Amino acid sequence: MSAGPYAGISLALLAATAYSVGLIQEKRALGRMPALDLRRVPHVIGSLLAEPAWLAGFALMLFGLACQIIVLTFEPVSVVQPVLASGVALVLVLSRLVLRERLGAVELCCVGAMAVCVVLLAASTGGTGAGAGHYANPGWMAAVMIPSVVIGLLVGTSPLRGGFRRRRGPATGVCFGIGTGLLYGVAALAIKALSGILVDNRGAASIAAGIVSSPYLYVLAGCSAAAMLLYQVALQSCRASIVVPVSNVTGSVYFIIAGTWLFHEHLPAGPGKLALRLAAIAVAGFVLITLSRQVTGEATGEAGAGPATVPGYLADPRRR
Image 1 (cartoon, one colour):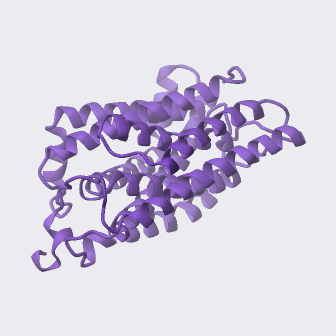
Image 2 (image 1 turned 90 degrees about the horizontal axis):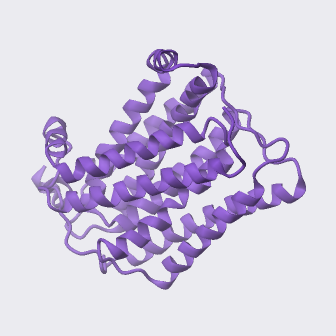
Image 3 (image 1 turned 90 degrees about the vertical axis):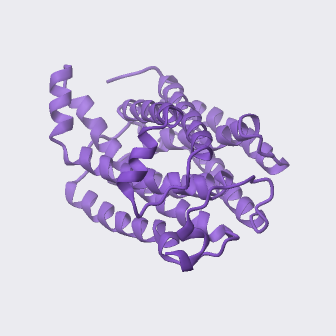
């Protein structure tokens, strides 16, 4: 599968936009719903599926994931993931416009920096040694994925097991962010592996058979389901400005490092394009880390967060 030099960046931007708009729509819907209790998973799933506004946001996020699978067939991870990370900037803008959350000077600067990041990536495309990889050793994939899933689940569920007081410090949101980031990172590796099926097969029936028979489909489904449930509780009980940046920086860094290595991808060979690509990755990482540190530093009083719906087992350890 081939595409023009900027088609991959455009499709990745579409994926990031759809995912971010869906995330904001889910956040709005969760604010109107009763507190979610992950000790009653069937009830949580039923509550989410019964909320049309949440389903609309979820459909947009699925569309974003479908675009991500397609773009990974012809663009390397080092191009796609920084563009997807630009969705954090869009989430901040939409939080200000839709959720009426305050956007400070640091956040505004980060939005501009993400725009610069996309421009740098566009300038770095093309040339030799910059192609997308499609195949990874299954043994190495398992060796990377399994410990990552275990760590992600342990960290992401730690707020559900630990005793957090009614005033939620940043630790709760950070734990949710790191855990879901690792789970979504593993899901992204599975998406990358599935993208190879689109390259090898022709015709809808052949592609569908290849996807259904691939173990990566079920890795993607399991990790996405676990991360999604944790993410819903995190969005409902913590500030989105904490959970989203921490989750994104964890997942983005994990996917860039693990994906580039596992799929044997190479950075551009030319020194000019290589410098632009590395600069774009550095800008994206710097922005995400800055946002993560910014929100954890200001979260002591939860200023500007508005009322949050907090499950009883998070608000008061005695009610467990």
